[in-house]
Structures are given as structure tokens and as C-alpha cells.
Amino acid sequence: MIEMLCERFGIGGRVREAALRAYERTAVLAYPAQQRVAANVLQAFLDEGLVESDFAGTVGYGYDDAARERYESLLARVLGTERALARLSIVSGTHAIVAAMAACTPRGKTLISISGAPYDTLRSAICEAPQSLVDDGIAYREIPLSAGGVDLDAVARALREEDDATVFIQRSRGYASRPSLSIAQIETAIAAVKRLAPRAPVLVDNCYGELVEDREPAHAGADLVMGSLIKNLGGSLAPGGAYVAGRRELVERVAVRLYAPGLRDRLGPTLGFGRAFCQGLFLAPLVVEQSLRSLDFFAAVFEELGYGVDPKPGEPRTDIVQAIALQSPERLARFAAGLQAAMPVNARFRPEPGSVPGYAAPVIMSSGAFVAGATIELSCDAPLRPPFEVYVQGGVSAAHGYLGALFAARAVEE
Image (tube, rainbow, N blue to C red; front, side, top):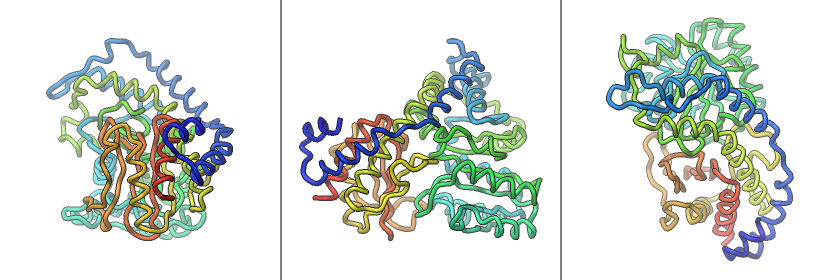
């Protein structure tokens, strides 16, 4: 595969040699968790018992939308929750997370992030932007991560002071030089929270992490999980939307917040996209595995070229994000331009740094997705600030991921 890609696209020299060594290291990798994930999803579909008529959608208000009801039931089975709210009208993971935080944290109560500072846009919505949650009367605290993950001693001290707080955990690294959290680490943290504050709802940002491990945060005790439908769970077919899933009464509380008291979750047309949602979920385990293969190859290529990578190739992964420390803004720009040239859409464009709402530093991005913003499709983001890391996400097929790595490496090395 790599020999063929290098020959076809004119890649030689140091990059070709690094890529061949990287492929030797990663082609033999197995992904046993993905086999169990695939079986879990198949079981969910068989237990749900879909029929062709379930794909019928609605327009307008969306009363009695069969596709919506079936898809949300499927999603709840896959995520291990009592209820799921998955709607096109929830437009992003950040939208879902902020709605869940607001619904679960009454005015005057405290929201505690026990995984450090959230990613930039979410932190802005919580405490920095006009009309943030803090402006709306919610108190906010952050507990930095320790070397081993969640700082349980600091969490215990915080909960002794505020035992009816809402607790938030961000599973993925975001734009931060810290490892993503595993389900095992999340489970340990949730158990500690529940011992000290049994009434405290625990909310987990599940973005980029769905179906990477064979358990989900709800299996580890999370009360609510939130994420985007155009990342892992969409299988590259979902056209938009996001979800909130978890304990029934909390999901209904979020629905009231999003829609209106009395209406709860009864509205929300699928606009004919029910088939795409369900088929995307059916394919999601395969797509996630292809993403993991792509990211291991990215890690191996750039490690062979002398750059720091996290995770390292072959290490356990807990999300579909690969960090590569490129050490300068010039290399970030070359990486983004190289990756963009490998995209199936907009390959002829050249990314330029720019301001993005919610980010203090300029950000450079590469994306050529069939669904705009669908980071399960190959993409990268890099804030122009030290340590000048680029964050690569996704890859619907390993072959495309390999090509993206080759193009990005060639651009950086040139």
C-alpha cells in the first residue's frame, strides 16, 4: 500500500523511508476492542428490531417521528443509557454539553470541571463569553489533572465544600497537551464522586471517544454523556446533529431546556435523514477502527521523522485524536497545507490561520469533509501557540489516512 502510494504521488527520500518503516510497525497492530464494539452495535440493532418503515421521517414540528424514536432507542442501547436525545436541532457537541450543564446546574449552584480546563470554545461558553453560564448565575471551578489523571484528593476537597455540585469530565484532550482519559480512569473518578456526593450528577463530554473502547462512560457510572453526531457515531453519514444520553429524568430536563416546558422531547423532525443516521451508526465501528489505523500510521511516520507524538503508535487509544508536536508555527502551516492537498473536497485550497469564535489564539485547520465539520472524516486543527501541536482527527478509510500522513509529512520536511 505505502509503496504504491509513494510511487503514484511522487513521494520519495526521507519521507518515503520513514513511511515504509512506519507501515512495518503499524500494519501488524490489532484492535481487539473494535471487534467487541462491532459485536455490541450488531447486538443493539438486532435487539431493536428495525423495519423498513422505521426510516419514515417527518417535517415541520416532527410529532410522532418514527425514525427519530428508533434512532434514539438504538443510540441508548449502544451507549448503555436509559434514554437518548439525538436531534438535528442540537447543532454541535458544544451545544449539547452547555445545554446539559445548564439543565443540571441550577442558578446559585456550582459546576466543577474535574478534568482541568475544557477545550477553548466550551470554556468560553461556561465562564468567558457574554451571557455565559457564569453570567447566568452558575458558579464554576476547575480542578487540574494530576500526572495520573483526575486528582482525586482535590476532587474530595471540593466536594466536601459543595456536595450538591454538578461534576463535569472531558474525556478527550481537546487542544491541550494532556492525554485523553480512559473509561477506567473515568470510572475511578465517578466512583470517588459518588462516594462523597451521591446526589451530584456527573456529566461526561464524550466527543471523539465513542466506540473507541468497548465500554462507554455510562457503563462506568456517568449520569449524562454528550457528543456530536458528525463525529464517531455518525459513521460519516449523519448530516448533522448532536446528542445527550443518560438517566431518563436528566435527559428530559435537558429536553425542557432545549425546547419548552410541556413539550419536552416530543418535537424534532428528522427531515428524511433517519436512514442515514441509522446506517451511519451501523457502520460506525468500522469507521472508528479505520480512524485508529490512520492515526497510528500518522504517529509512526512523524515519530520516525523525529517529532514528539501522543499517543505513540500502538499505545492504547481512548479517542480519535492524534497530537503531533511540530515545534513551530511554520511547520504547523506546512502540515495543514499538505494535509489539505489530500482531501477529497477542497484539496485546491490552502489553509490560513484565522480567528475562531471561542479561541484566544489564531487557529489553522485542514478539512475537506463531505459533511462540513465532520471530524470523523480526516482533518486537523492547530492553535498557533506553544507548544505548536497539531491535532489530527479521524479518517474514514485507512488508505486516505495514509495518504494524508504522506502529504503532510512531505510538506513539513520540504
